[in-house]
Image 1 (cartoon, rainbow, N blue to C red):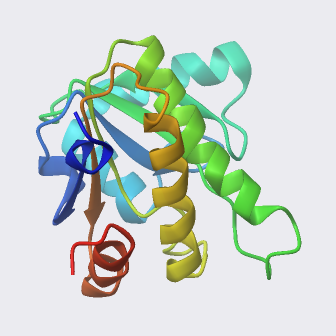
Image 2: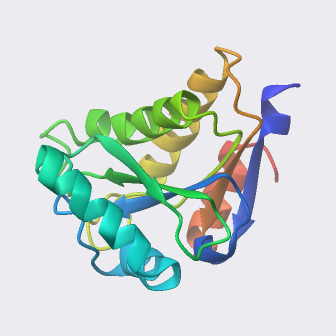
Length: 176
């Protein structure tokens, strides 16, 4: 299957996507928050938070660029992969590398857990203020490089909440 056939773009609510795993743009505490993080925790119910608490007890949260996996609770997705994106501080603090690590580590965890379909939000582009154009380039580039390894992933979906991100991803994926 060609790479471009494995990547899809949707505009909508990531909590309603039927995939093996959705990726959550979490914070380091893993205790839920605003934006997509809060939406995933609310829609998925207490089982997600219960799993997050166990992870915190075991390893003390999740560092920026890292990722962990939990149940999907009441979500259509069986699992949630939580990753912590970087806060944008002008680009001089390795923000690009940390954001790429979010995508790479999420995909690695997916691969390790036999996940075939995964959906990503626009990590770090909300309250963390990462420039949307740069974030989209990093997301697409990292996913394409990962998929070139011809791993077991069958579908990666970028789920955009706003028209600005949809337009950026359409351009990067050659869908215009």
